[in-house]
Amino acid sequence: MRSYGQFCGLARSLEVVGDRWNLLIVRQLLLAPARYRDLIDGLPGIATNLLADRLRDLEAAGVLERRLSGAGGVVEYALTPWGAELRGPIESLIRWSTPLMLRGPDGDAFRPEWLALAVPALLDARIAQRPTATIGLDIADPAYQLRATPSGFAVIPRDGSALDATVRADPAYILGLAAGALTLDDARALGLIEIDGDESVLRAVFAA
Image 1 (spheres, rainbow, N blue to C red):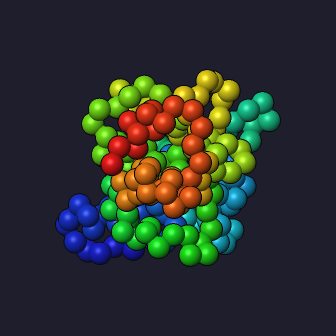
Image 2: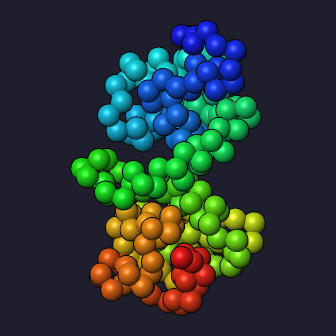
């Protein structure tokens, strides 16, 4: 492990997670424990040998661990309790990134499951009065849903529960709504979204 040689919490943290891809590996494992192949699929652009190196380094540092999953004893990777504490810093970086996201995908890869971390992080920071609602997010296959409760927000794959409303939009516009960079009125006027169901629920969840 490379050292900055500084007795500073930030420097020592970056010695563990500051290398390229490390925080994105943590992002994937915050969504769910994953097998090696799942991580390759969820990290477009990473080389297999580099992923192996990063996993080994993060395991040695105590950020993640390997464990056996299922009857076949397949190895999967999961965050340790200490590694899972990176959720807060990662969510803060997601919120800090809002100005960087305004230009849209610009040809970059996107996977729908990344919204499961980004949308709750953005909404939790903005919406004080949280309604109780379930909103369908028709952004890709499989479809997702946004669940709002007084304790917070969560984005999960569609589970068949009743929906109060459904939004059909490009993922970039869902992020814009969650960040408060785009209002429902503007999105509708520009033809960027389609809404089914109770629009008042959407206004409560995506309050400007």
